[in-house]
Length: 634
Image (cartoon, rainbow, N blue to C red; front, top):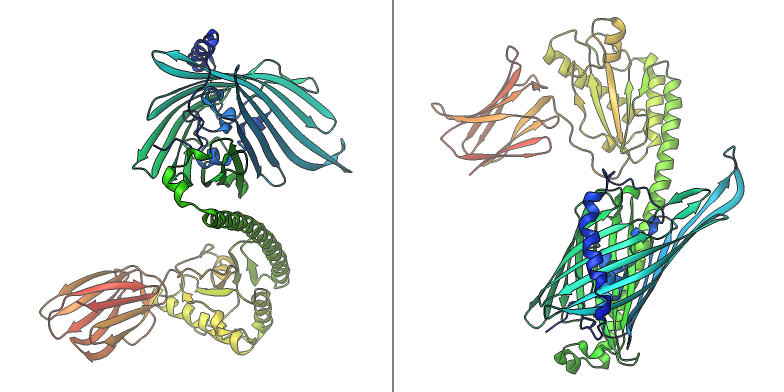
């Protein structure tokens, strides 16, 4: 039968019945803790040494910090000191990770069974990096200020026989020291925990950081983050090669809301473990975590069984992620592997496993470096976009109001409007606007790789259908000028649309407002992702593809409804709010059942209709792709 962590520390060795009062005190304290406190403040607590809430251990973070009920490896010293009472053999744990920016955290844990009981030592450090010092006028002094935190926990554990069951318990004294610049503060706290295991279920409860003294900086005193936790763990063996461990924790931190943690792991052949966990609250920087572990027997190293753990957890609030690595050495436990595995695993296989482990560690480091390089490239790109935006805003300021930059911050796109005068019922660029068109070309060349969407607009004078066609012709004229006279690549222009009077930006009741509405808008896409298909305004044409397919081409994405009619047979497709770009209304087809297509705009109800005449009844389906609608026969 496999054990719960693949490192055998589960059976108690010693018992000290005279210490049973610790369990009673712990249970009573946890039961009365919640109702005794006032209203919570969710994530805003009034305490110091908050680094004590940031876990250093990869396995536990990979399980979403749900571990109070399991408490089956040496890192229980930070989750439930009660697990110390079940420790059977010496265990050493080493943890390290980079957290936010230049902050670093690590830890060293040791559990040692003796004839007098089980002792545990846990040392955690947290380096908060450095910042530049400022004087009282908020000017930089040139000096750097650093902050370093250390917590030392000294614990003791044993077990009691109660109702023919062994119940483990533990207690620990904790010393916390924080250093900020030239200020140092020290406080002491107490951890108490209890753990009860059956064959498949385990129960745990703990009180952490019960304050004996308080941290004091500049006459300001802060309590340690006093926390009450309870957990329920499950162990499910599946055959001889699989084991599932799960845990559900509930925790209450002083001055905060209740927190819930859920996590689990799958252990395969006592060699590989995969993990995942989630926090059912949003008060912490890391909402979820995943991880894996490799378990390696090392008879040559004091007959130890070694587990290397890795975890990944995103820090969404900081647009970062945390990678943790942990090593756990269970000395004298290498025979805990199943006999079949020991018999079949030779030196060559162990060497291959070590190589695989080294590759995975290198891959994790490479991924971390790639993420850092991607962040640097993003920062450089954002700086370039800010500089380009400033540059085109200066160009717009010199255009006598004919160019207006709409976007104020760099992002995925930059938008500007062009306002030039066209002669009545004309779409040609007038010579007195050539200089303005030169400025437009200069703006486009500022983003030489960006796709450009152009939309044309008119005021409300004239019929709707007329204005749609006029705005489309003027858009085409602008593109023709820029490609022929300014050498702008025609492939940069993405699906231009004329909207006529549909999208005013000012009132049409004044001449100034109508002038602002008579415009051509440019939207430059600065990212490498394909631009979205724009909203369409009109039907361009109808074409027959083959004897089973007809396509309707629009100038953008449109809405429509369809129906089939008989006597005579035909397919009818209506487009509400959509116009016709061409004056041609009939398209001959003569393929398969398709005879012809007829188009018409109905101004009284403001919709366009396409009718496809058929020579016999058909069944069909309609598919859309960007700005094209396909009618396909079944």
